[in-house]
Amino acid sequence: MATERAACSFGQVLRSGLVAAKPAHICVSVFPLPPEIGEKNKITVTDDEVSRAVIERARSLPGREKEVWDFYRSNANALAQLRAPIFEDKVVDFIIELANVTEKKVSKEDLFKDEDAEKSAA
Image (cartoon, rainbow, N blue to C red; front, side):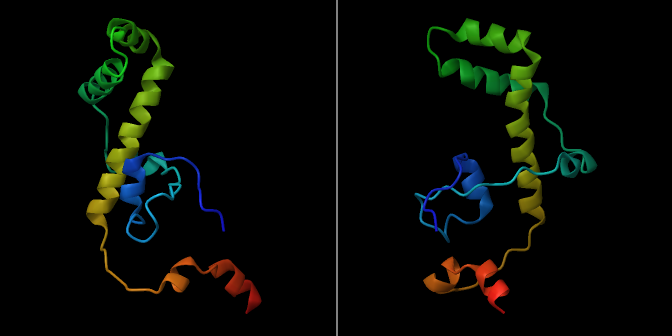
């Protein structure tokens, strides 16, 4: 079993619900959510949210804030790349609000056992 997975954001790991179950150094891949979930539930990303993301990105490059701001304002694809994770986070938050979470204690062995291997052996 690999100890490293595809890179993902800390927010995705927290939202995955697996932080408590897996060691913190393992990054869990979160599969992209279908955009239909957000569209069906009228989840949107406001211009203000996108502007805050642009400002945050600009602040991460001191001295080049205007250049970063101008780049995002003149590049629709780059702006869409900022909008997409905001939308995904909002969809995840929506799903979490609807979730009925229950706790179940499991042994370390059960947590890491390969369910696919067990099914094929049966």
